[in-house]
Length: 126
Image (cartoon, rainbow, N blue to C red; front, side, top):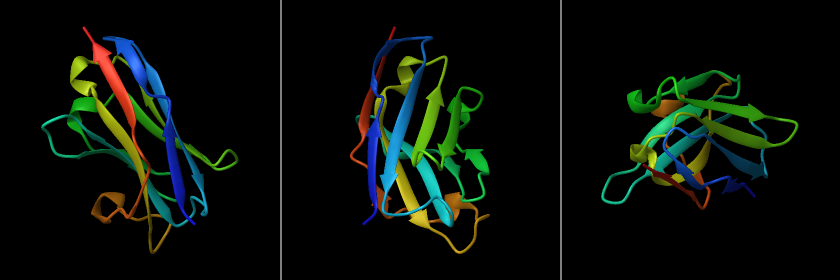
């Protein structure tokens, strides 16, 4: 069945970089939207970025545009979130998620994600 496992989180100083990984199994990227979400203590879950089966990526959160990049590697069955110029405000638990779609070029932000990883903690210190 569908499985998602995040890794790559940790503690980093402001201005540093991290790359999060999400290993997938039980499905292929084709006809699936993949997304990265985060949740900080006391705040609601926030959608960060999405990528569809055709490889079209969208960064949704204005606060991370220009700093975060979503990508996927079909050969390695892995979704990535490259984060640079990290800020303390980026501190959160980061989740990857998946949902099957009707085409390879959907608008991923409109879909309800129903498969989720366990999350990985990212802590950015000043």
